[in-house]
Image 1 (cartoon, rainbow, N blue to C red):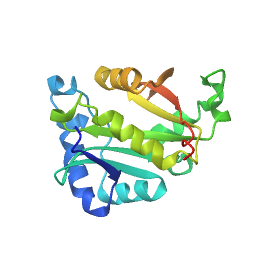
Image 2 (cartoon, rainbow, N blue to C red):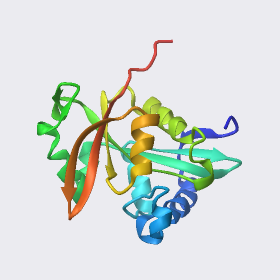
Image 3 (cartoon, helix red, strand yellow):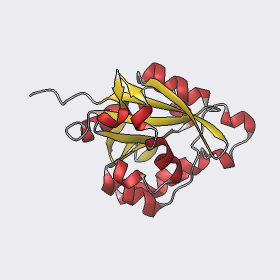
Length: 189
């Protein structure tokens, strides 16, 4: 995948991001298609712009086509979303590497989505590394969540990215897994 470019999204990328997002939205997929992973919550271009302004939206682009994206947001921005607010309310009692998650200066990772043809090709790792490079000086940990009924995404994040399972939680009758990871400092040049 050497011809894929990982970079911060621009407003011109938002329509392509949203096409990819909606193609993989839980409510738009059959039960069988959901086995290959999905995103849970819809968004629009104004939300993408707000996320990109808050922290970052990173895209994977091949020949001008967006083939994947990942979002990162601050806790301050994320508190407006009931699911994320609930998850963050668990930080004090959730241990990560021996101490409460609330002791870390953390950001929220996700959503992330990769075009079906590009899954398993290293795009996820490329997006993750590009996001970490954008935020490395601001945070020492990241937190993600995955729906329990999305085992492909859970495997990808724990096995390919090394995220650590922290705790299970419920929100609006749905089960999720909270994941944590450290943000390594930027290497000295």
